Every structure is written in structure tokens, then in C-alpha cells.
Image (cartoon, rainbow, N blue to C red; front, top):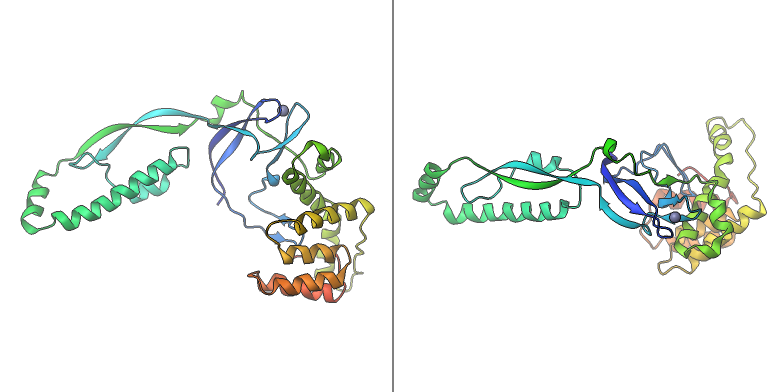
Length: 292
Ligand SMILES: [Zn+2]
């Protein structure tokens, strides 16, 4: 399940304009449809490779933005404690806790407390001591301060970070000297999926009804240049992903190279069904994106 726990405040790395962006407590990457070019249809989480636009005219990635922390307020909470003043370990409550800046601290404290309780159980559980402990057990409480995400109504004056469509990736690619290699590659990957989008529906219809004509897949010069640029980046990467590289060669119609790379991918731990499907497509000289 994709779940949001409040918002974080960020600033554009270029002009310092402030925005708010969801603070994800959990993310679900499942999708109804997955394609060989990375497109996920019906996904419950679409972060758009973290690319956002700013009113200053530049684009930035969320990972490059200045993170000003969770938009939260401090509240006083009353908790139950044991005779030593330690919080009573409550598993259901622990699992319900929201992710925020204090999450790791809370986790560390609760794990320490949990092990302390196990240790105490073995150390103190002699019959005579147990009866003494039980008779002395008094229910106590103490107040602690906790950070709670602010309600959205209280932060409406901070605009949401501006999501950018796949089609707008063209602007980043065009002004490539203004952006980092990582940003440019992320933009090119999204633009590749965008350029393939028109092909998907006709191909799905063809898969359902093989009496229909096979939809043709021809890539434009712009499409070819973009795919080739992604391929060059992948070939220069520190970790070589032969399945992705093989699939890019296949999409460019270079089937021999595609087969060679996909053969190398067999020694890696890839999902077998994806590899088998793409290998067969390269052998049959099929270059279009495929549902996998
Ligand atoms: Zn800006």
C-alpha cells in the first residue's frame, strides 16, 4: 500500500523557492501492466523519476532539492510506563506509528527496550522475585513530546512541488548542458516511454485478437537519438545491466548485438520470464516494446 505521512518542505536548488512534497510512509510499486521499456500502467505510485519544475523555469530532482524536513508540530503525548519508567512495549501501537523524522530514533528505543525486557525476564524471574515484582507493579504514565505531521490545511500556503509530464522531458533534453547526467538520463528514460506510448494500445488489442493486423513500430530520428543516448549511458555505467542494454539494442533494431547482450544477462540474476521473452523477441527480429 502507498501511504503518505504528512509533507516535507523542500527548496529548489537553483532559486530556493519552497514547495511541499508528500512524505511517503510506505510505497507500493505494483502495477497492472509492465512494459519492457519501463512503463508501468495502473501503478499506485508514480513519482515521475522525482523530476519537478520550478517557477524559476528550471527543473530539479527531488533528490537534488534542499530538504527542510517534515512539516510537523510537537505535541505532548501521555504513555504508559513500567516500574522502571520505561515505555510499555506495545506491538500493535508500534506498528501503527507514522513515519517521520523521529522514526529511526523511536525504532532504536523500542528495540532496545524489547531486548531489555527479555534480559530482565531471565535475570529477575526467580519465583521469589517474581511474586515481589508482581506485588510492586503499579500502572504509571509519563509525558513525552512527539513530532506529528501538520494537517494539510495548515500548510496550504506552501505550494505543492510541480509534477512534470513525460512529454515535457523534451525541454530538459533540449537544454541538456543545464542539467546533471543523472537528471538527463532520468528525463531521457521518461521520454523514451512517452515516445512508445502511442504503440501500446494497438499492440494490446492485437494481443487480444491476433486476426488484427500487427501494428507497425517505426521510430523517428528523435526517438532513435534518445534511445541511443540512453544506451550510451548504460554502457558507461559502473554496473552493467545486460538485460536493459540488450533490450535497448533490440528497440534500435540491432538484433545481433541484442542477442549477445541478452546471452550475457543469463549469468546474472534476472527474472527468467523477462529474459526469455526478450531473447525470443530479439531472435524473431521484433523491436517494439513488449508487455512483460
Ligand atoms: Zn527554482
